[in-house]
Length: 405
Image 1 (cartoon, rainbow, N blue to C red):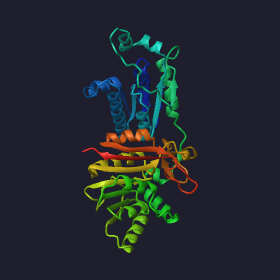
Image 2 (image 1 turned 90 degrees about the horizontal axis):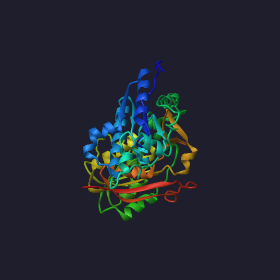
Image 3 (image 1 turned 45 degrees about the vertical axis):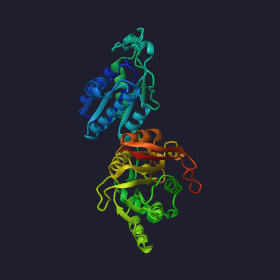
Image 4 (image 1 turned 180 degrees about the horizontal axis):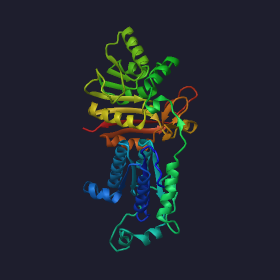
């Protein structure tokens, strides 16, 4: 496998229990990818822990935090145009879900090896240590085997590391079949897409049930509210009756219409700004008490989600809250859509196109990410029946979280 191959950068995540042969297989994969002319970085969980491990223990939660560090390091390297091959246990489904959502080209390899074989290999001596009286070694407790790996390899018996690596590379380089995606998912023409959407469709003007629920149960008096992805302003105008409101949207059509409506109704407690939340926008308040977003998180790619949540954490006052409602990956509509693709590559299995682009979000993983940005969860709920519209009853997640002072 020495011919020159043109390939977009990706992340090959080789996982399995200790003794499964991850490091050996990953090294061979990296070497053979380099031989094709691809820029490749090889990472090993043991080496990374030796560099970062002083701040991380071996208890389950510490291991999960370290796994997220690995995930984000890989994302950063891939973003610089380099393919990453990593060998790591890091067996947490929320971490793997973040990998798949964060990387346009993600390939998950699970080396499935029986306990008895791993114990015979025992490269680190941990299986032997577990048999000693008084020694506690958590080999598998709390770890989660992959639910949706791209490939499972029985890496024992007659299967050599070279053969395992060949199988991985054959499938990885073949690449998945992608579906062309409209502008919003690719980040191309997104403004024009939503302009056309609002010009063609008449959205409801009454406040959503989520806005009413949040306002009646969690809002303080005379709060400074920022709504991103405000659309036609149905919730922003409701909030303006008692609060100072700034609405942000990427559609110039709705920004113009909302400004005109506020002027016609003589409402002085509202501003509407065109732009993407997380970017520098002229006129944005320096600090707010509330950040609100309904049905907008699932309309943005993962990298925009990260930018939005980090920006919300900076903008909110200590004790301020973020209020979010979005479609989750349990929504039946996800099964009807086509997997999104850009330039011949799959973006993410949670990104689908039906009538338009949506990213269906794993609710538990999202709540865990929110906490890493400095929030504590006050309220969380995932089910259908919360956002009915006509004949449609999507499965949505509702999250209310407070900025930790």
